[in-house]
Amino acid sequence: MHDDLYAPRPEHKFSFGLWTVGNRGRDPFGDAVRPPVTPNDLVRLLAEVGAWGVNLHDNDLVPIDASSSDRDRIVRDFKKTCINQGVVTSMVSANLFFDPVFRDGAFSSNDPAVRAYALQKTLRAMDLGAELGAKTYVMWGGREGTETDACRRPDEAIARLRDAVNYVCGYNLANKYGYRIALEAKPNEPRGDTYFPTTGAYLGFINSLAHADMVGVNPEVAHEHMAGLNITHAVAQAWEAGKLFHIDLNDQVIGRYDQDFRFASANPKAAFFLVKFLEDVGYDNPRHFDAHAYRTEDNEGVKDFARGCMRNYLILKDKALCWNSDTEIQEILAEISSPRPGVPTVEKYRKSHAKELLGYDFDRAQIGMRRLPYERLDQLTMDILLGVRGRRSTVNSA
Image (cartoon, rainbow, N blue to C red; front, side, top):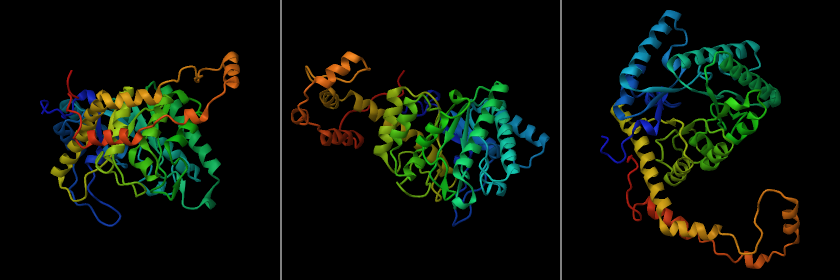
C-alpha cells in the first residue's frame, strides 16, 4: 500500500503496545469480547498493518510467575518473530499496577517490601527491554496515589518516588543500557488522585533527580485531556525543556474516564495542532498509539483501528503542510508578529537596553489597536481541516 498517500512507513516510527492491539474489550461493566491473541501474533498483526514498532510491559510478554526457562524461551521466540516481521521493540515498561500487591502503590507504598519488589520487577523489565533492543523505558505510576490522604504524607511519597527513579537511573548507567527514561503522568484512575497528575508536574520533579539528564516525559493525549488541559501546550513545554522522550497518541472526550480512543477520532482540531507541532519542530522519537479498538470490534476491527490511528496522523500531517504553505495564513502570522518601527523589543538583558526600556513612552492605546484576526485564522484552519481549502501534498514523498 505504499502507493497510498497515507500509508505508514518505517520513517514515521509508528508503534503500538501489545496491550493496545491485544486489548480484549474488557471493562468494569463487562467481560472480554475478543479472543486472546499471542504476543507473536500481535507482532504479525502490526507488521500486516504497517507499524514500525511494538511496545510492551514485562507481563504483556512474560507471565508474572513464569520460570526462568519459560521466560528465556518466550523472549527468544518473540525476538525471532520481531526480526522476521521487521518490527522494532522501541519501548518497555514494568506493570506495577495490575497485581494485588500494588493495590496501594508500588514505589510510594507504605510497605518497604512492596517498594523493594516493585524495584526488583522494574530492574528485570529493564533487563528484558535491553535484551529486546529497546531504548526507551517508560515509568507510569498508575497506582502511585491515594483515595484518602490519611494513609501517608504526600511529600514522603514523592521522596520515595524520587529514590526509585534515582535507583533506576543508577542501574541504567551501571549496565550501560542507554535507556532514555520517560515519566508518564495521569490525574487519576485507577487511584482517586495521583501524585504527579500532569506532564508539567513531572517536568518540575525531574530537576530534583540525581541523573536528570537521562529522564524526560511521556505525555499522553488522553491523560492531559482528562485533566481538562491542552495537550499541545504540555508537549511544547516538554519539547522546549529538551524532555520530550516519547509520546502516547490517542484521543479522549475532555473530562471523562481514560477512554483511549483511536487517535484524532474525538478531537481532530486538537490532534491537528499536536501533529503540526511535532512535525514543525522535527520530533523524531517514536509515535506510540496508546489506544484500543472499540469494544464492538472483532480482531479484524482491531486492524481497522490500528490502520486508522496511523492514517489519521498522516492526514493531519498533510493538513499541516497545507497550513504552513497557505499564503493568507502566513501573511496573517507575519502581520500580527511584526515589530513596530522605533518601538523597543524584548531581548537579553543589557543595562543599556533596560535604561532604554524604562525611558520609553509606550502608547498603550495605539499598541492596542493592532488587529488580531484570530477568527479568520481559525476559520482558515477549519477550512483546511474540513477539506475545502488547500490541496493534498505528498507526505510520503522522498
